[in-house]
Image (cartoon, rainbow over all chains, first blue to last red; front, side, top):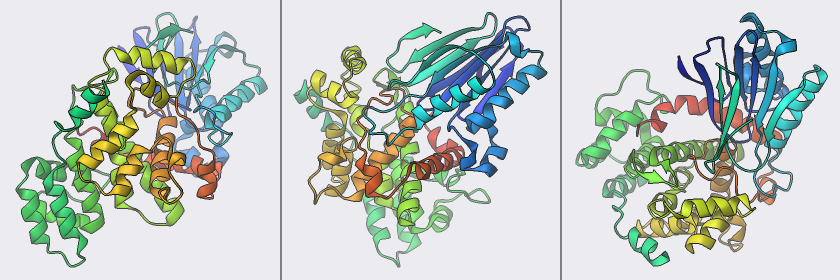
Length: 160
Length: 282
């Protein structure tokens, strides 16, 4: 039991109600959090970039780096632990941008668009979303009840 | 408040003489390894750190290096200079020191990441590495370290302004009268860093404010390395992404978004190798 840390370009899944999955300091990266309350199976992905076409070789080595390779992996791993798609609650957090970015530093925005498109295509409803803005976020998923907490770089914690 | 902050600079330990001495020796291409070793050995704190750094995966020896002289030979001129800067800067970022509600070791991790990113960009743009840029990137946030001692109460005020749309820098100026970049530039002057380095530190969030002749690549590359490290979420637990974007920076270096996305992939790889450097303060 305890905190299971999800690094950058990393994902973790759990079916242990004592676990808390946590990822620190999402900047423009995005965390996808999933939870099946019946099977008590949850997972968290911390991806960095929207599209694996950037570097196919890297995507094979580290699929969790990209939205399009990381998200399927997160779901499949949860299925293997007993989760079912129709019961899974999905939350999306992160994708911050710098101020008045002149459309030059758009990775945060591109990540948000990528994640929304993937879920829309797969008929998955995003139940909670806390994205954009210009602060970093730390995310926790409490396995015992599926509650998801977000702490921003300003220090405020809220439940999503 | 400003006066109190500026006065604090004079109480900072000077940048280790060892570094300056080694740098001087290294400037000549036919330096004697023995001379360098002598200087490093006289500073046990730096010597210990050099061994630690040299054995990190980032500098990558195939077998463990146990003596300073082996380290000097193995690293060679350019890498040794980076290792020296890392060893010396590390002493300011001690665990337990509070900076804007975070710990100085978090700021150290951010600083190492920015230094590593600076070399990735340098290779991408100019096909070589640059020790000056490495140093500027490594200590770019030194102002925050000093500022952090004064802002226990003001931190909330600063974050409140940021949530109203101020940039972190603007919020610092409004609340404290000075921002951490300016302060860092002054600390670099106090350390007798070359002028170009002082400016790169002072303008690392706003290189566009430098005059045309002062606006060399150095401040822009520190800026870009910092922005991209912040986007990866490695912010030392403080300012997040509350900084102004300067669109012209990509044009200046003929970079496209895809280049930068690739450099983030590279940063990810190199950070894995630099784990020991980042965590040497823990």
